[in-house]
Amino acid sequence: MAAVATLAVAAGGWLAWAGLSATDEDVRARVLSYDPVDARGVATRVQITKPRDREAVCRLRALDRSFATVGRAEAVAPAGAGTTVVELTVPTSAQALNAELVRCSLR
Image (cartoon, rainbow, N blue to C red):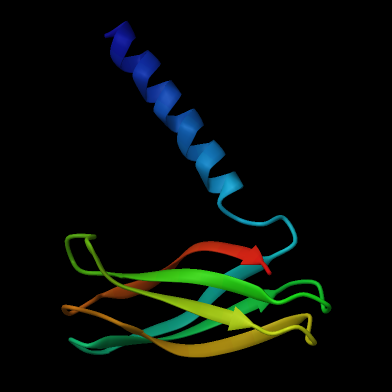
């Protein structure tokens, strides 16, 4: 039982570290909306906030009902505006239920 608890704590610590290291400190993003259009894509709106003088890229993935990844795309916020709303369709290989952020970084 103690080994299971130790493993759970270690896994939780790794997940926290991975989540924090997966996003650039100067970029904040969130999915505003998603709409599974059909089996080929999910229409998605992403709000990205970043330094005005830098471009940011956020990677998204689309998930099916079993939480398998069925699509990937990148939302790019160009230099100039601090906060940008990017609209894109995440192409999918099968029917997706949602789209989520994976990672954002500055270029």
